[in-house]
Image (cartoon, rainbow, N blue to C red; front, side, top):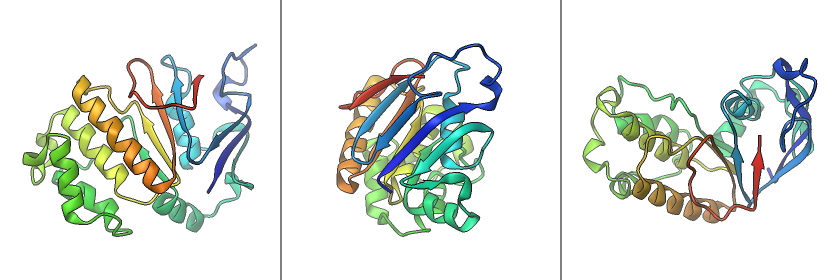
Amino acid sequence: MNRIHLQQTLPQVFADRNSVSSDVWHQDLTFRKGEMYLIEAASGTGKSSLCSYIYGYRNDYQGIINFDETNIKACSIKDWVELRKRSLSMLYQDLRIFSELTAFENIQLKNQLTGYKKKKEIQAFFETLGIADKLNVKAAKLSFGQQQRVAFIRALCQPFDFLFLDEPISHLDDENSRIMGELISTEAEKQGAGVIVTSIGKHIELPYHKVLRL
């Protein structure tokens, strides 16, 4: 996948508003592979909804979202399985970590689908992000910031054309945010991938091609 094209896309819940001032909603907007985008948003402007639409588990919107030339509403379940396995990776705002599993087991749920990362590479991510001692600890016993780093590692353990990060550093200090930015840059360059980051406050420092206001 080389581009994600939004054509007059708008959450249905916003349809009765007299006007919507946004660089994303109700616009003709293209996200291109190999480029980085920051979407700045206030609460309630549809930030997480946008991620949900593009990832395909909500379709309560007007307008069109295309992956290359394909309207995503035409994608079958089989299509979405392959897209989420090899083209789209998501770090959700609410993380979606399985609390009864260890940190490493949470990563393996994703990584075993493609075998994209070797165990030593995953361990290196844990070490780099300062949670090497949490590898075999159940996620329920981790702080939110530690879980956030686990979810981030999971997002890197698959092939992707586009990486979505929904408020990825909301509970991280500046040093871990800097490290995360370096890892994103490295992985995105390796795969020639696009990166889309959302933020309602502080954000990862990356060489963004475009900053959009939601």
